[in-house]
Image (spheres, rainbow, N blue to C red):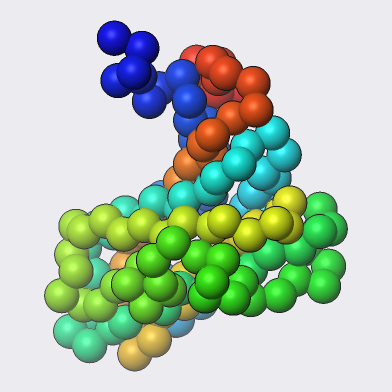
Length: 143
């Protein structure tokens, strides 16, 4: 049964806490994710209701060698699994999920989701799912 076990080989980290509303196009900026000890990172986004009839949400993944994201750079497409456009959302994506993976060599990674044309409420959350641990199994609950 071990070959079907994902639980012991991933480590979820809060990226963007569930947010109830953004009516002014303020970006959702994730926590800085430290990838030390893991070989892969996937951001999982979950949208609730997107109230505005023409809102869009664009995604940006940035990476840095500095814990405070000093000198952060947008991640090149070749270091992403999927595209930032595919991870974006629109007014038609109520209660949908999206994902985008990072395979670059920088240790620290951040996700920003920026609304545009939004005057209604947007409900959004994101988890950073670290995988391919150097030391498995990973603890449950995560520490």
